[in-house]
Amino acid sequence: MRTSNPIFSRWGAARDAGAADAHARRPVGTTVGSRPTDDYATNPYAPGADTSPRTDGTAVTMDDVIVRTGTTLGTVALTAVLSWLLLPVDEANMGRSYGIALGAALVAFALSMVQAFKRTPSPGLILGYAAFEGVFLGVLSSTISTYVAPGVVVQAVLGTFAVSAGVLVAYRMRWIRVTQRFTGFLAAAATGFLLLLVADLLFSAFGAGNGLGFHSGGLGILFGVIGILLGAAFLALDFRQVEDAVANGAPREEAWLAAFGLTMTLVWIYLEVLRVLTIFNSDN
Image 1 (cartoon, rainbow, N blue to C red):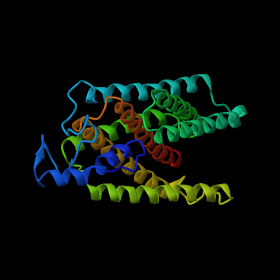
Image 2 (cartoon, helix red, strand yellow):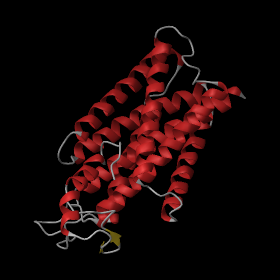
Image 3 (cartoon, helix red, strand yellow):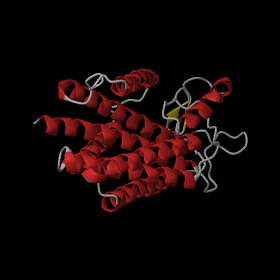
């Protein structure tokens, strides 16, 4: 099961690389533990040539993922609050505030790309990404709350928690089934969504005013809702990747990659919820 989240793609790629060998060694339809071999054809994380999960205490657990994710999200939240308090946005320094937010966003993006292409997770890079992402979110949220839609940030945070909880419940109840078709459709939909975002930015930058119209009105709300749904779908895919890693005995260090990917997805959902609520509140 591959994912277009770059942080999780290595897990899926590693598992898929051994699929042919595993099918050659096992009859189709047999099971490994509680998983059919059609679904988890091999275990790329097991030591040596043995395909059984790690039992020496070095395998990732759900607790590891929860702790690392809490640490990463806590870093985002802490730096967001500090940037809100220490970098207040006012009309006289609006340009400086936007510059800080843009700079932090670019640094966060650069760190995320470095980590995405590293062979091993780096907690320093991941927490650095979280810190700069928090600065960006703090300045952006402060600006919107002060000058566009007061009180909307609290609503966006609650909305993000609601979406995340809903996806988790739906995934655990198997109302959402992450299949190969689901993954392919999600990748295509996300590609189209991002291309529209780029086109909107280009139209806005070259004097088309409101771009493609995604910043206000019904079209803006619709586009934001689509973004939230895509983020929710990616969150389900992330849950599946974490479940795969734990079931297949991935090394404990992979918990940092899980935390990284989940944080990226939750930031996406927060920004899209913030977009929808901002448009709704400003239109009213």
